[in-house]
Length: 89
Image (cartoon, rainbow, N blue to C red; front, top):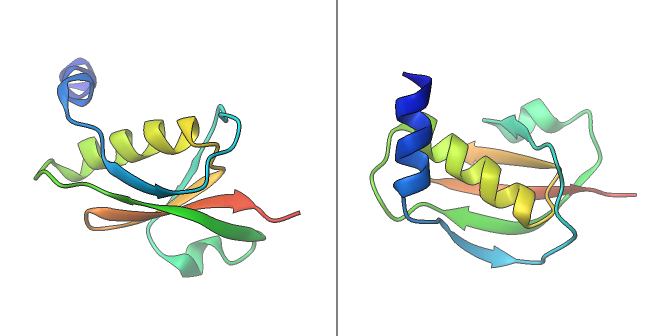
């Protein structure tokens, strides 16, 4: 099943992104509510929107991969959108 999800994610269209870009990161924390990220000091650097109807797991994988390329440290996913976050130093 994991191989199948990876194949679908590679073939899926990239999400739409608006926001700032930073050097790429290697890891992105994934949250599903802002409340879950409250213990960290993040700032919102952008927004992702999935324009196609993919499963939740494919959307999470797409958002995570794309957010890392944008330099994000975390994302908050709600349905087919996500806030892209960076540590606020």
